[in-house]
Length: 287
Ligand code: 3HC
Image 1 (tube, rainbow, N blue to C red):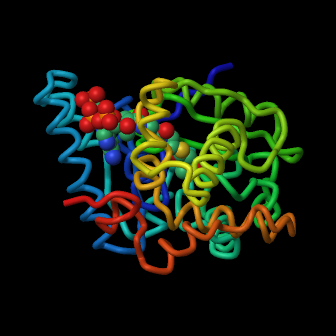
Image 2 (image 1 turned 180 degrees about the vertical axis):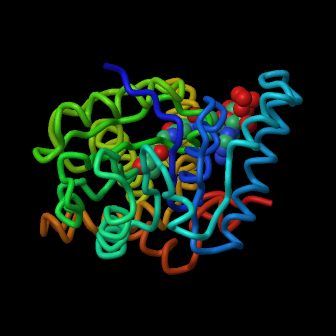
């Protein structure tokens, strides 16, 4: 039987969490977006407002649809308030295993036993979080893509501990918020899309570090020869060079494989604080 979700909690109001919350509110769900930082919640609301205004101007959404969605979207700092009567939880906080495990354990104590607790993490598989709860069969990855308001795919990743029912409900939830799910039947580092993207980015960095072509030229090749919407360096700036650095660092620590370490150019940008769009400078400069 299809389970319709009426009330959702999203924890973490960064670029991913806030847009997951917005997409869900637009789909008619009552959403509680929780963050420990008031400032982050304020920024999230401001940014979502900006995106919604553009969509209204372009005639993609009516002001009434947006108003109604915002009336369903609650910005809260209290975890108890965010989880009260919730039916589904998505965690989208910092990529840190211990912090996530602590949160999963707290959430587990505060929500009813039939509630699914999903992580949006692209690097931490849910088997590393499931045993922080008393409901491992209700834990899975639900991996969205940046920017969530635009990107249609969501990967539902079933660990050995995840029940078939949980995977099926997660897939239905993704459809309910008007996204396209794919179900990964087993956990694999990077999942599907990021594995393919990672190979592309690695090659782009190899070409740059070996002085074969410039950032702009490599991006042009992907856009004009392969029809990608943006090139790999513009994409790194969008998703965050810091995120790429952390991902590679985790991959290296997990595998001990030296080739997975952050590459020289990524390390330089990371230690210079050049994270991409969010800091105004990455491979490109933003005003
Ligand atoms: N947030 C929300 N919406 C955004 C946005 C953002 N940060 N940036 C752009 N948009 C929206 C615009 O409002 C516009 O919406 P509309 O079609 O409703 O008018 C639409 O995207 C197109 O924007 P633009 O015309 O300004 O610019 P582009 O044509 O360059 O599109 C893009 C921007 C959609 C980001 C496009 O460049 C793209 O598709 N890039 C590839 C994104 C990608 O590969 N994402 C996957 C990243 S990997 C990942 O997320 C994995 C995770 O684990 C890190």
